Length: 426
Image 1: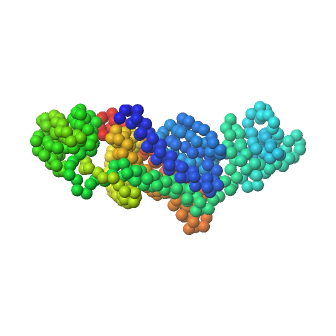
Image 2 (image 1 turned 135 degrees about the vertical axis):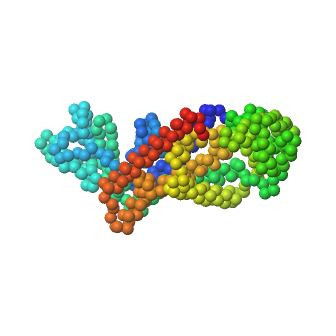
Image 3 (image 1 turned 120 degrees about the vertical axis):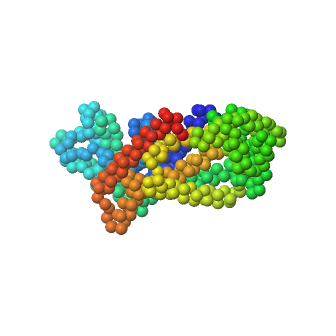
């Protein structure tokens, strides 16, 4: 597979997984009537930006996630104070634009001093213009213009905090849920492509050939039937194959396969494993597979979801118990490296890996860690129990600290990833 294809597939895996997560937040926020200001993939400086309807869609520099920015979650508008001079543009005597600067350059506007303004509830502006006091209705989708930036106002009923606990919880949990849906669909697609091992296999096949290993320098093909090694018939005995190769480091072996029923012989010199000294040629074996039925596909996908979920939580448990060191953790660079290696194995294996990544992202986001979806759901749960929300300033501070800590951890593991690349480790 060409390097350009591998890079493209690696980028697409991350793009699809993050996009489906953020789309879950976006869709259910819009259904609740919340104004979504931005749908972003990545963090940091903008690489691409386009506005459609009320939402700006952006692609940002750091591909380590994404976000959906909803009205009312963060300070987002410059506050207009009584006594401030502004200019407004009117359509049918309703304010559609409020200009806060460069007033002399604005055309077709009414300029005056603000006596009072309410852009959240009453949507009213009282303006003193040329000594005359005028009261205007403000369009619910009016734009506030300052420093060449247009920002749509958000009446209280379009803000995140104005919605019911259920509506807000649904908008938050929808992100991880969409990752679970995607993971299930990808596992199902994997089984449709790969099938499952036959119940009573009669042969052993070459399942994968590792790039850079001795086998990759021959004309061996994935799917070749492994017939014999040094004249010893392999049949379906995977352990026998491994044993014969392991006992021959730096010693050429005769590797016989069947391709389309025709015998082909190769001379391969196993490479010693740096740790054990055992011979390795860089192949993995696989048993013949059979197609998977429609109903069986869903059963297998469900079982894969369950098995991988247990495995992920076992990893979290080991991390909490201190059985992992920081050097054992991988960040975006390591994940991209592994993804590119799996992409080399073909679209089937990449589909399974993408399913695992999507499942992991969904589970990780539901953890009760500040700044993640799980933490926000806990705050909503407390609000439901107490009958009133937690102080927004305190909640924002908790999420800010959590986000800062996550970014520090991300920097640390990324630094480790880069060191591994420099040292040539995998």
